Image 1 (cartoon, rainbow, N blue to C red):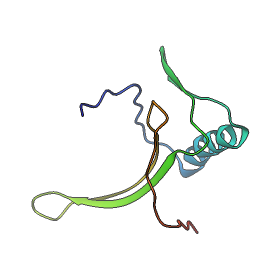
Image 2 (cartoon, rainbow, N blue to C red; image 1 turned 180 degrees about the vertical axis):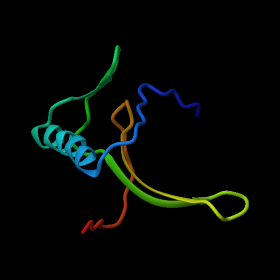
Image 3 (cartoon, rainbow, N blue to C red; image 1 turned 135 degrees about the horizontal axis):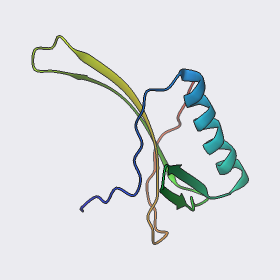
Length: 95
């Protein structure tokens, strides 16, 4: 299935700034409100359903020499636009 990027932003931020962004999303999720992402003149609003799939992934990528490694952690919330969602998974713990 082809992927359509609806919004993208990437910039170096302090840990505190990142925590503020994540807290804002968490507050919207708690309140059952839409999440609006915006930068400059670009924006998109997402109505996140009550039971989306939550994916957490930690990765290490290395170049061909193995000398330069980059680590990342990704938090992804996904759902089917038509409302059907059959993902199941184990219990997640973040400490």
